[in-house]
Each structure stands twice: as C-alpha cells, then as structure tokens.
Image (tube, rainbow, N blue to C red; front, side, top):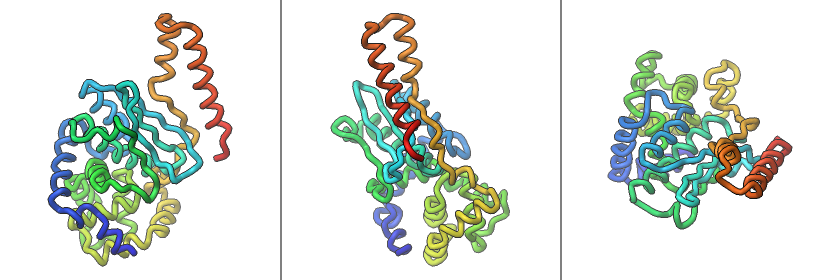
Length: 266
C-alpha cells in the first residue's frame, strides 16, 4: 500500500511536469517567500495576491467534518480561501499551499476553474497532483531540507522516524508530506520511504512524548477568523457607505455564523 502511494506521486507519474512545477515553486519562493515558511504561508498568500493587484480573504473556521480541508472560490472578483481549523495546523498549512497553486494558476491565466466553480479539498481526495507537488515544494524546498539536515547532523543513511519528525517540525508540514519530500529529493530510497510511511503512528507518539513538532499536530479549532470582513463591515458602518439596513443584515449574518461555530461540538 505504501509503495502504491509513492507510485501515485507526480514525481513518479510525470517527471517532466514535476520539474515544471519545481521551477514554478522555485520562482515563487524567490519572489514572495522566506525560509521555513510554516504557518507563514497565509501571509505569503495575501502578499502574493496583493502584489498581483487582486484581493484575497482568508477564512479560518472549525468544521467538525474532518474530511473537509478547505476550498477556494471567487465571488465578485475577490478570492475567498477557507481552511478548516479543526484539522492539525500542519494540514492547514499544506491545504493553504495546495490552494495557493490554484490561485497562482488562475492569476497567471493558466486556467479559469475558480470562476466556473470552486477548488474543494477533501481529505484523501487531493486529486490535483500538481497542486500537491507545488505545496510540498513551496513549504519544504530541497535546499532548505539539506540545510536543516546538515544543521542537525542527519546523514541520509540514518534518516529514521525521529529525524523525519525533527524535519517536520522545521517545515510545519504533515509527517507523510515530509516523508514524500525526502523521497523526491533522493534522500531516502523506495524501501526506506515505505517503512517511514508505515510508521506514522509511531511518529505521532514520538512527537507528543518529546514535544518535537507537537504544535503542528494540534488543531486550532478555537480560532475563528473572517479575514478583513469584520473590519470592512465596521468601516462601512462608520463611513455610511452602505444603507443602515444592509449593514445591520450583514452584521446579523456574521454573528449567526459565529454562534454556529462557537456552539458546535468540538
């Protein structure tokens, strides 16, 4: 089963396309990113969209159905990214970077799918291999992985569950995503990679026992963020740019949504 997962990577299925995505990720990192991105991916996304003369609203809301990881949609010319804070923070980071690929493709006019519908990410159904590869490369570039391995004196031949968790802690990505990156970068061979994938539960236990990467395994379900919407609502109210009735209706809707999430069983 673990070998089948490796065969499903873009790295294995289409090396030419993989290299193209790697170049795109490299250029993006060079222009908009910084070392060890982690949960800084959200501010990086905002900056990229702003520099592209577009607007992005990031909504971070707890949805008890853990199958829903996030989605992106465009409404009235504005990008809306929603990420499920019920998920571990590492998965939130990866979901945001996954959706970033969809936004980059749209802004660079490579596809218009976000206009026609929306980009929906369900757990275990991340069907866009290009988006998954892009997300992993933006969050954990090969050069930075090698740099961290040198810093922690990790030899390629000695990469174990513990070393993988330590690297996961550096990059703020899910354990499996870190294992895949080690494989794609030629750091672990097929057999070793399959073993690491099969020991995911051991990795989680090690993380909780030692505290290494523990924060990335915890959810942020108490975090409810509506992006810039509350500030815009207040601005419209203060400046009188919208009729009082519309402002009142918008405020009621937002408070209703907040109550739904705040009272939902976590």
